[in-house]
Length: 517
Image 1 (spheres, one colour):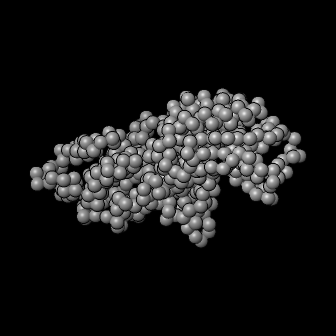
Image 2 (cartoon, one colour):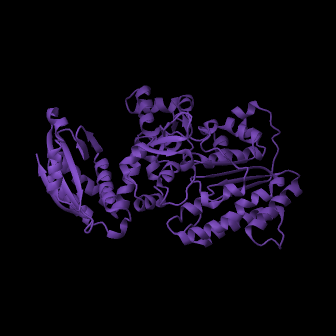
Image 3 (cartoon, one colour):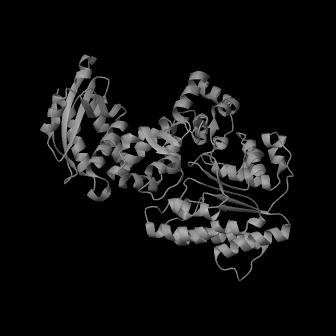
């Protein structure tokens, strides 16, 4: 039995009227509208934030018919129609200030056409306050404010501080206006990918409740295991039949590839909803989230920071550090969490100390596939060709060709492309390449006498790499031998290569290497 998945559809009304699959999140809507007034939610892209906003919009339009049979229908609500101000900042030209002005004016003009305009209201803050007040006076009901992707203009301009400041100065008075209009507001919710501490939006609305890390709302977006088993069994059975597999194996494949997100303490495992539906609809386990694009600001953040990429596998941080982004160069770990590339793996009981890691295989692949072109300044197809050459050399036990190709690859990267420390730049490039090779790669591998910089295991070979910065390949090989790094692998049976590499911070590439086997 096939299912009709609402892929790309973010309008609750359309999903319900066209009888497409809807994972019932209306229990959360009931909690929101019954117990609070101002909310903020941060979630990665393609996680259902726009659908949540649309669901709230339909609720406050009084569309009881659309909610029949859903969890919220079990509770008493008046189902009144409220004046709604839905500010959608998803699609506009974010490369210039005029793009933001254009979309804002379009929204404000449409609201003023309904509720009137006072010519004395000149700036956005005055216009917003005025139209909210007149909506209350005209209808006798308080306004509902729904902001979708409040931060789009800010994330899109993070690498351009001057433009980012202009965008922020335009948006700040609009959002802070909500506090002054409180007496005319019934409900307000803002969503986005990131939370910016320097925007001051949260101090401007001091009663705004951030539910991004709240255990009560951990599954408000995405698909929990319980929901997967409740709503997607027909699709899983169809997928299994087509792939000549079993529902149990299909379920495990979906879990390995698309599950593993945690947005709060004791949060259930959450699947990426977009990827799950795309997989079941296309009958293949693809990289669907990756194809929606890695944010450019995130790539810029990583290139300009001194973050050592292997540390991301067990990155330690705190709740406070996760929820606020100060700048894209100073807080890459927070950005990686908020954009969905890292998730909470462990929350130390009784504290706000967290350990982060990649949620699943799809995200890890997407991360490294997106990073290599960004770090190397090559088109995706060029980077892919380079990887294929590396794979061939490593698979055939030809470290000489591999290191030679690696030297050429690094030498082609423009000097100004990365502003991080030279040794971090070099080792991050190596780590990305090795991860994309698909082998078991270990960074800073511990032995009884020291740590191997990089250890690579293939079916037939083991590669031990010791890397020096502005030193010599001879000293690198001497370290491997003196500390007997080979000892733990002698009984393994695979051929072992010891490789000493020296990296020059002047040429920013490999200037010498030695290989022993």
